[in-house]
Image 1 (cartoon, rainbow, N blue to C red):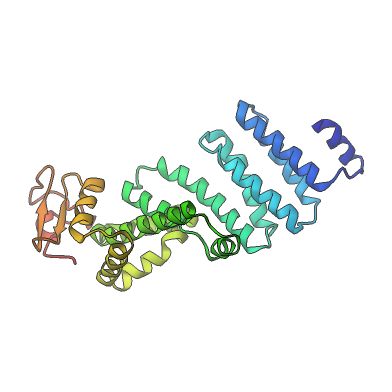
Image 2: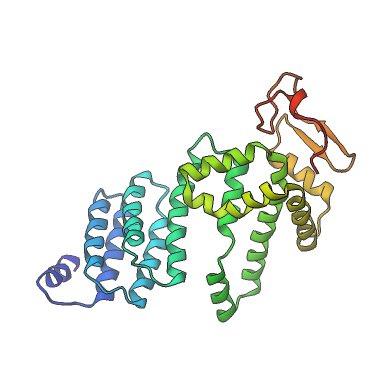
Length: 283
């Protein structure tokens, strides 16, 4: 069917833009599902097709749906270059003119970067979690759609949980200084879309890290109902292994896991020895 319709299209007969787009969608997805090596060529053909089309609202919607669909197969590294080529064409050509679909396109690049970050040994588990939580927070465009469409209670709970997870990492962020600021610089240089998702957090940390930590904790306790000691313990469980953290209950620094020597590198990322870098409470 594809070859028949494609031939009609090439011969100047319009079988319908939406119909053609649907055929490309099925063709590319089929290649991804069964592992064919034709995906790259099919993406090239799809881009060639889009170059000849008027980017109507309906076609933008279809293309955005295709991006979301194809992103599900990015776990296979072979499909990332053609996916990036498609996303790059849509970005560089300005194909997505509606804000909501520009957001979808940005999310496509974020998905690509998230896979690369998981394989990057310079990306800590904390930084990865912070980025993913920031990416999950819905944009204002999506929030407006949610308000218009109405959300189920389950969807509202899911969004609230995403907000709680981000607040949790913002509260934790002060414990990662000053190394976290250098991590942001690395993100900016290598993963620009991921960096955009945490840029506001970087600004808050540079301006007043203690205030950001306290404000995040206040919101966290209001939304989640936990206590500061509970969240401090949670940080230990999630990220700490033989490091030094601030104990808000006792008002002091404490060691956990393997005890650090005075001349061991401080886990804060300063590059200094523990006895030099750790001078007192951070919150």
